[in-house]
Image (cartoon, rainbow, N blue to C red):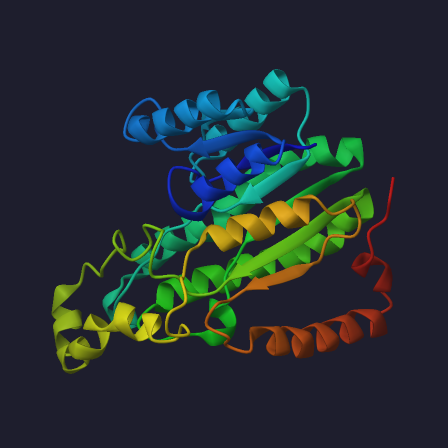
Length: 296
């Protein structure tokens, strides 16, 4: 089994994945901000669950907005666990509202968490993985760069940027035996803190100028929920289960992309078309080897 570090494990998909991966026999480091402070109750719940179930689930601090915190978390895992096999990039935040109403600084902050947080942790973990010539970077992305719904502009930008960062990083790390997986959850209106804790634009004057659209924004969650098949359960635990399934596959046989979309939004078809164009372009450049995993 693998040693797995998961970001954003206080709630939602990260929390569910930490629990599921530990039950599957992995040694899991569930990371979050302030496990002895703001998130102490959630950290305690994970530790209690680990004790009750007899699984190897440990909670450590990691703030993806800090390179020092990312470095420290990886050092802790290496010192405590003796190695690191899988990094699960999951931490993220949501903004809801009109694009014009968000300042550049607000959007930059979201990108800092959702996208640059990935880069910080990769910079902390990749030296170890490269030295080993083995490992997996697993990104919890989103179908949203394909579906691109309204009123979530900054979030769409940040997740699209994260997806691109994961892809271009995959070219380079593949040559050091490090595989890449991008899990793309579809929309979920339950089981995560995304919508309940979503941020809003600070510039209320500009937001007021768009008030004619307020009724549409007000039914955003309802509109999203309407995409699911009536009677189905939109539980994000299916994302955690898919991540655990992928981790059980042999090294080198894990998929680059996996879509977990209960809204049936044709994302797989879009991915197939884009992948065909991208791989053809890279191969015609003469760089086809970066599309394949080079085993140590």
